[in-house]
Length: 186
Ligand code: ZN
Image 1 (tube, helix red, strand yellow):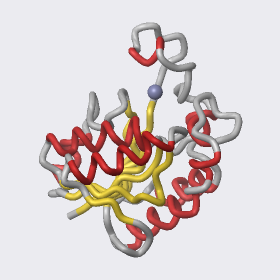
Image 2 (cartoon, rainbow, N blue to C red):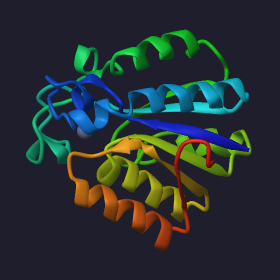
Image 3 (cartoon, rainbow, N blue to C red):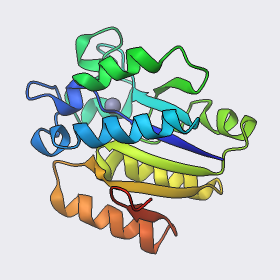
Image 4 (cartoon, rainbow, N blue to C red):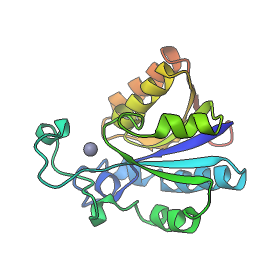
């Protein structure tokens, strides 16, 4: 069994006026985000939206000294970007779809993700979203440590840091034993 883990494709991380935006590289993967998500849905696979959640004025969160405020609960910046939000609205009532509030870079940290996956017998995780060298990377590392196999869709991840993006894809292949795939080569 496999699942799609869709990470942080929100207005704050993708839109031009997002609080912590990856910008153009993130906007360019929208069509692949939509098509991979639809492929998984049509195939009857699980889709897990793992979305960063912050409180306003939270000095205790470790990111508060590193980044401007972003993905604040209930704010438009935390909605998924453009048509990706529309697609989510269409799919969200299915029992194939789960939405998890991410608390740290890794989608596993402080969430029920591992339990949800184990309950469904899921062993293979397909990662898409942003950004490659922060939340996708940390999620891949924790997945590896928990014994999952990891597949990253190269044309559906993006970063503001091109070197970090490339390094991450190599690291996932060389050190986590993961697979990096592109359109129709899954
Ligand atoms: Zn955050």
